[in-house]
Image (cartoon, rainbow, N blue to C red; front, top):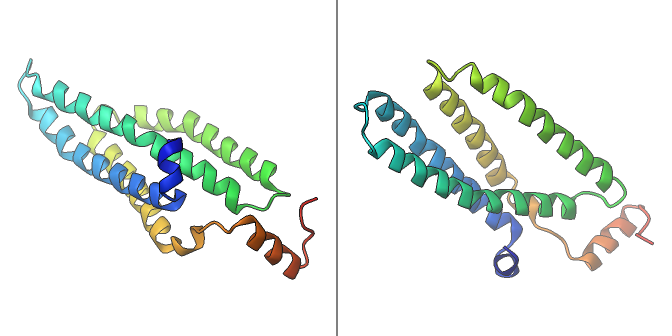
Length: 156
């Protein structure tokens, strides 16, 4: 990740990771449909599932690392600790409530659950595309000049 982030901007890495994630989730919907109709003991479901999980795990660092990096670079230095704490709290709530909600859909609602996941990923992808220009990180000199112009104190 460190070598890639030297050549690729955080916002481009985040956008490409969400596009890859969206494609992987979209490919999961037909896999779930066909896996339900597969014969007992067929191994193609396991192979497809393992390939899908491997690709998904490979994409995850490209989602989380630029997200945290951009969030820390864009937010104000004075409220950065509070903002990061709030982000971590929301993530923790999602990690608790998400499996509880998903477990109720495992019997008959698996395609619905994956479709909701795809919809959520699509909304986030749409928001990243709309705010792509605003995700550009200013250099430290430009940031200090903007803070002086806006009347905020410059970091000591």
